[in-house]
Length: 337
Image 1 (cartoon, rainbow, N blue to C red):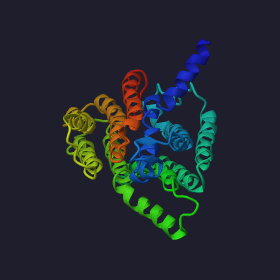
Image 2 (image 1 turned 45 degrees about the vertical axis):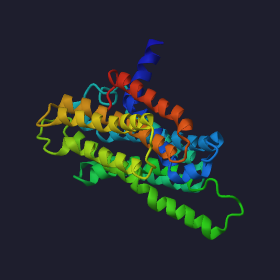
Image 3 (image 1 turned 135 degrees about the horizontal axis):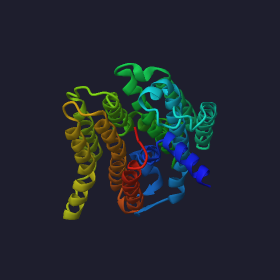
């Protein structure tokens, strides 16, 4: 029993258990685009069709499998480096067999694509493209300045895109003219990236750029402040299109939900200024990754608020908040970088 628990702990270390909590929110915020809200929520009646919301579950599972597969693949490609710099991790220490890890990587990636296929060929295609992006990053792109961080950001952006792909096919009836159907889908796929996919790519690219210093002490210069700047613009893009709210409660909610991820990123920036020690970088990388949960809360809440469906979004927002608190607890027991 003790051996089994130890092996499970090694695998949970390998897939960065705290980070997995940030993954389900990617396709969820893609799904909670204006288009999907318009299709599956009856804004005038104030309710949400839960059956439609559950359609995002296969893509959530796909995102988790692909993310976990990417992390195991990352440690396989970094095995020689980890033997020098992180010898206590599961693969370099020999606690997990390298061949077994390679097989598990393939199974996770294939399983991710198959799970996404349950939502149709478009989601499956995006999942396959995500698998390619993961392999590209791990195989060498991560060592190329600018390209590497953007490649990592693209991986999370494609995860968001899977959720958007579901929403592009919801709610338009069988009698909808083909031309109108095509135009609705095209308009969503062209406009929504500016509010969710692009900021996700840039935020993760900025965090990855900082993570390049997690094994050595180097001057950070402007890097620590990039995530906070991107989150600030992201929150403005999410809030701006929505109507001005009159009640004090609405504005208090607005301030708390929108400002928390910005403040969290600013605190990390302050801790990372100058030439921080590698341990400080690693710790704050974990916090910045966990900050995605606070960002996801804001995106879900404000996009549902625009259709008077905010009440229905509150349980989901609270679940993401709970995941953030659980992330903090787990990050003290498992490494996240």
